[in-house]
Length: 118
Picture 1 (spheres, rainbow, N blue to C red):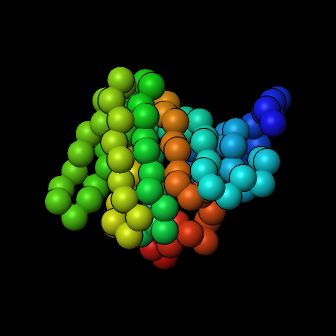
Picture 2: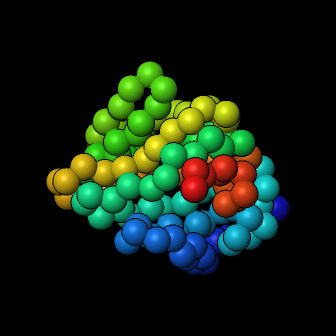
Picture 3: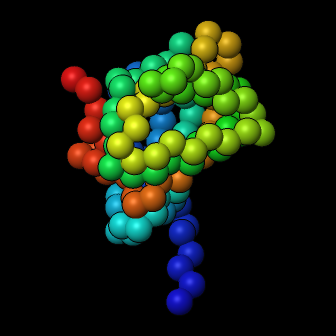
């Protein structure tokens, strides 16, 4: 049955980034997938993580810098990056204009499943 998502749930995070989850554990209880719109300011970074989920990062504006074991990948507006469960990653923006992007996680994101470094 169709389900209208009238508004996202704002997930609080430190560092000035906003997460508006449209589909997922927080907003509608969905566990198979989460879809969130992110806005990250210039110079933002978060701790490295080794999540239990695959993540698709679709950049709409700016650049998301993703550190992996193989090196750093700059994902520009109009590009997407897929990272796999169990892969250590670290998301950041450069010193430019920040970034706006959509994150799709399979299964759905949860803070416990992200396994962020202390």
